[in-house]
Image (cartoon, rainbow, N blue to C red; front, top):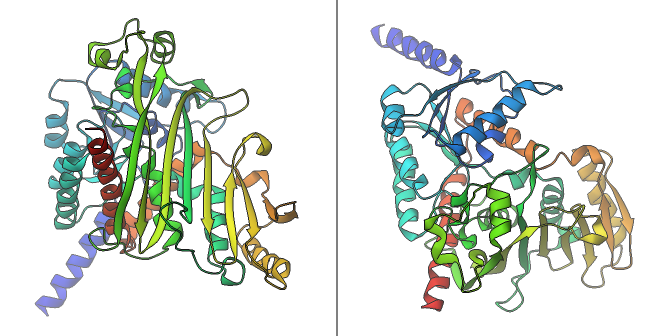
Length: 450
């Protein structure tokens, strides 16, 4: 009888905890992604958010963005930001424990240390990428996942690109054997999977020109390009090419080649995008004899997962051509067709998915149409269009919700994992695999230069 009462009490107490709202903490915000998480409201999250950070421009820019969301004409948010700016802000946050979910998006120099301390102190953590920028950081991240498991909290990174419509459609078609066949193994010189991303320091966010913090140009604080945006690209390869599979970085992964190179930024361009009057001392070593900043923001590497050869690359330019923005190229080559996302001038800089038949396959067009009909059950309105190389998918504009909208989708998924305790078993090992790949590529590229 007593055991039955104890069990009922435990079940009641557990349900009471789950019914309590999530209380958000923002720690040391320095990247605009910290604000984009709050561009929407969530019924599960208390509108009062505690922010711990040093006083300064990074914090003010973050608060300005939140205020813009709170005061916008259409669907304004209702966040109440409670600010602490003492020098001991991190220790204060750990001691006060005003929330149970910490959002991290900022300077990456201390991010992995933050993550480790937070999981050790039983905070749930939703972190912007990258969660580690070097081999030492990867070892700390491994320990942080151990702490999260021990303390029954959830550590997760913000992988927005999984929610981009053409990426979702590329994955869906790759799972249709009659159209795609099986994933080609490729070779080191001719990978079967390629993802290339082009980004820009000068860009618009939430309708305004983005102010970059000066530290964003310091590879010791931000991380070099080979460990930053590539996090998304490796994630997409694992997620799309090996869906629902656990990837063991000790057994299933090998880094083949890696390189990194500079983007040249003029002092005027730097001052325009940072609003700084002078180049700070920590960037003096990036200034070449002509007075230009040489920022190691570009990188590329090839690797294998389960014997499949893949390549990722990222390039940073200062500013995009008129009418353009950040762009994405993605190839998945199957034995029957190649699925290619392009986002160039011919596509009006909008991601477009192409299907190119690789060999004779009687009735291929009909099989492709059947696959698209199947996809239409989830995404109504998508149609096929023939072109000189094969076919392209026409996607209704309603599905092109944009990069900023994907942050709310990531948060919604994360909140489901918190509530239902149903995060897939492959997520944690594949996060570890992802950061092993990026940080190992960084190590290999550094050795090649030395």
